[in-house]
Image (tube, rainbow, N blue to C red; front, side, top):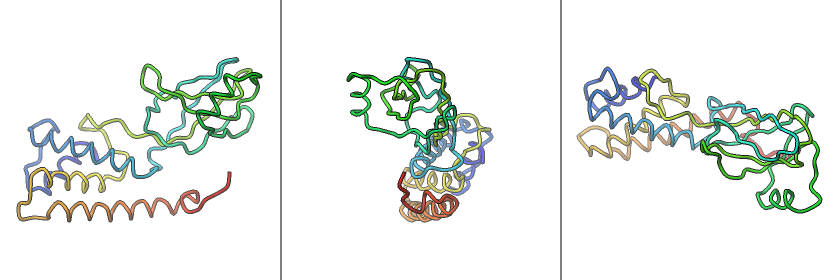
Length: 215
């Protein structure tokens, strides 16, 4: 569903008049806020396949720090690989990385470890690599990255739209109060059941979501 369709779906459930643009009325604008709040909550609940993104870092010799451009700060890491050397990278602690980059001797060779360290001027997460690259390597970060806040009427939501609608509907009921229809606690409980079902269904497609694997 598009942003506008999500808002109108919620409005219909509230027995309100639909709109031609999200910002048409103060109430439709409020529902738009609830839709975005719902989207964020659902994105945080699970590593949805629809949010998958690969961010490529190309190293420079003797440079350890890089920005994950476009990743923001709320992503989940699925895998990190060095496709130049055909090796996987291990996520180590900030403390370990800080000591390796500052205690001598410092290694300069194929990077095999990474640790996140702050953000850049665009508020994208920065990452340190170790050993410090001794040349050009292609490092691919497989992430799940939340979709940007919905703003345009025509933007299609990435996470399951039915969950967004049900969550936003329950938020709207809380704001408006009971009016003889479904109460907010019932609506939110229904949303939680739906969320659980969707997560369980998506989880069946990915073995890593069903068992612990030593890596």
